[in-house]
Amino acid sequence: MQGKIIKALQERRAQIRARWEALLRIEKVTTPLANPDTLVFGLDHSLDEIFAALRQPPPHNPDAALTKTEGPSPWRAYFRAGEQALLESLVLLQAEMESLDPAARDTSFGNLKTVINNLTQREIGAWAGICQKNAKPRRARGTKKPATAQSAADHARHSQAHTPSGA
Image 1 (spheres, rainbow, N blue to C red):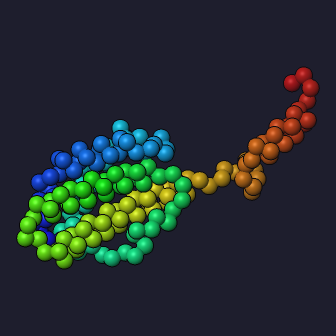
Image 2 (image 1 turned 60 degrees about the horizontal axis):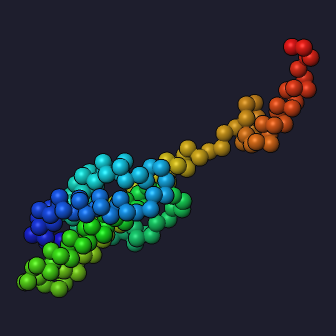
Image 3 (image 1 turned 90 degrees about the vertical axis):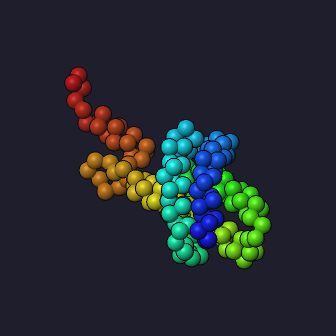
């Protein structure tokens, strides 16, 4: 991406951030952690990462556009709103640049989408890794089987049957 385009986007950072937050607040909240009041604290850090990544040619990751993970993630709506805010700003900026070469315009658009998709994929993947790591079934004490409601009820009945009366 051309340096002048990155610089012009950075000059619009406050507007991009405000638009990102506004779009984030109208997204459907899919998990308690997707609360916009919580997620807005990450906007500045995400913008820092995006602008830093734009200065380098983004590595092409063919899987970045595909979200491989299933289930709710607070990052889906977050980055969807961010992508819209950044692309809107880029399009408006490019419309003001009369001498912008069409190839440079398309390259800038593609680079921005790639950077956002790479960041989105990384964060959703990290989130999924945390959730999968913590989703291991708990095991009942002294068994090698995951604890279930049925096994807990069976254990309670067994314990009551072997408890002396009047104890």
